Image 1 (cartoon, rainbow, N blue to C red):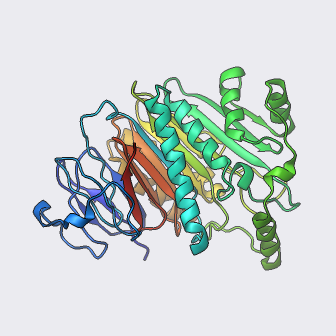
Image 2: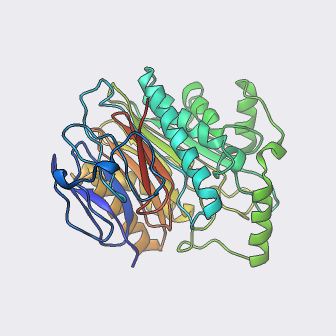
Amino acid sequence: MSRRAALVGGSGTGRLVRSGRNQGLYGTCGSAAPASCAGAEPLPAERLPAERFGAQWLGQLDILATDPPRNSVPSVRGSMAASTRGSIDASLVVVVHGGGASNISADRKERVREGIAKAATEGYNTLKAGGSAVDAVERAVIVLENDPEFNAGCGSVLNVKGDVEMDASIMDGRDLSAGAVSAVRCVENPIKLARLVMEKTPHCFLTGHGAEKFAADVGIPEIPVEKLITERNKKHLEKEKLEKGAQKADCPKNSGTVGAVALDCKGNLAYATSTGGIVNKMVGRVGDSPCIGAGGYADNNLGAVSTTGHGESILKVNLARLALFHIEQGKTVDEAAELALNYMKSKVKGLGGLILVSKTGDWVAKWTSASMPWAAVKNGKLQAGIDLCETKTRDLP
């Protein structure tokens, strides 16, 4: 049985628990007492070792090192409590993910961690500068599309013909405005194009040649598709063809996606999701990422979600909207994420993950796949990780 970690408890207290089938990290406006992944009881604040405090990332990947606010204590190994510090940034939240998939190789982990942290930081800085939630999620996803370590933009995996076909979507929780594109090729940042569909057309979704023509009409430069193809993804395709590895719902390798959710100072929510799809896919295959309600959803009355994992499974259960349905029924963000992911796993044997932020600023990152790079910023604290029990934190300038 796989493990999950979630921070639970009321204001001012918390503990790390593990049970069930999901792995995940849960953040609230409360504070957390420390606990180990072995399920130890929380330590009282006075017993915390002083050397765990600091405003930098420690070398040990499984230790959260923070300069804690006065009324909270740092958490270790997978807990992610955010604490209110009374700053003007207290209402701002950005959470990002880099895709739920098979284990990430040791030589890539630090690059992936740095990339996901950079995306969350730039999204948060956009909010601090007065930008909207839509601005923030777009900026965070652009950072990831420009990073070849992630399956989006210039890191997109290749289809059966060795070509790139990218999908993306974005949504504004204020009025449910949405924009999406699918199967686009010669565009550097599909999420920019998706936003322009939302803001400059009467439509929600453009695909293929129509989306590319629209890109030219609004002045987005066409780039050679070769600029989006990496040597790593060429080798990836060759290996997949040799193994004849058909994509299965319960084996979501190569199904990475990138995404972001945000809450701005006006209480507006937004999500953005972008992907290159799955390696060795059929030409024209479209997964969940550009589909509103599956790859993501945002509603100011509920929350914002971005999903990742086996696209066909996510489409079948409408995963993003399903998670928000549970929020609508009064569940916490942690409960909503777990219920949605467990339903997908039990009903269609699909694995994946999601990030969710509620209208009150509570947030969760949860997954059933082997790993999911994630990062979150709230109250000026950046937290990031890849696997369960591997979390780092630091104060942003």
